[in-house]
Length: 132
Image (cartoon, rainbow, N blue to C red; front, side, top):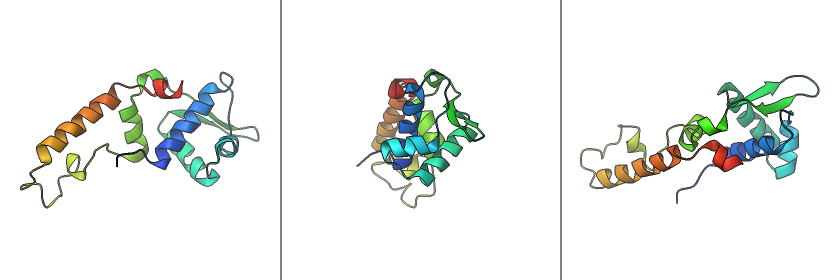
């Protein structure tokens, strides 16, 4: 079954929460974690990663937290997934050629076609569309 990871799910929840907050206001990891029942330590790590990737800004201090700093219209869902989890693919052979079956694989071509269609679909969907 193809599904997004918890890490990506929590990152999307956090972005949507920030987007629906008052414009420019800062949101703490604790607030988001408490609101959605997300483990706070895990969410904090995800938010730190998104901050390093330039999606959000970290504001330090006693009333600190996070706020969106990137234009979500300019970030595709594919790029977002790959920032959070790495290469997007149905099977490892799409982005890693270490598979022992690669030369004799009889499903490689159709799987690559499906994978490319999936990547194209996610490339055409902006992060803004998911979080608005």
